[in-house]
Length: 165
Image (tube, rainbow, N blue to C red):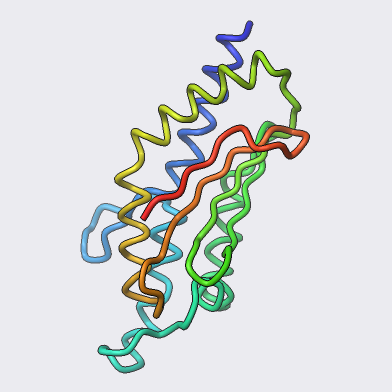
């Protein structure tokens, strides 16, 4: 039973993480990437302003733009499941946070298994999140923007988290 739950939750993780992989602007291939969409939404704003100047002072300022908020809301809605909820927000001036919360509260044995699977998946997707952090440098005047991914149990305790730069 634990393995079935773990496999199901890892599958949900992959769906959630698929929303975070990088989308190439000039490529005909597109993916439904939250991170890439968030980063690419300011292209029009960047093009309208000086190309040598960052458009936004902080990650929060960037995320608060109507275009980016619309994309975030759309992606959250499309990735909504009965088993997990997702939110995207800024932490401090320099961190973009993807926060996933399971709707069910798992016991400590299941949490240990989940943590192992989630950590492995985060390791496999580390280049994606690192790339998103690099893309943020283009749009925000923050020296070292970061991407943080958090997975929470249903009781809101953190199962695992990782920050990518």
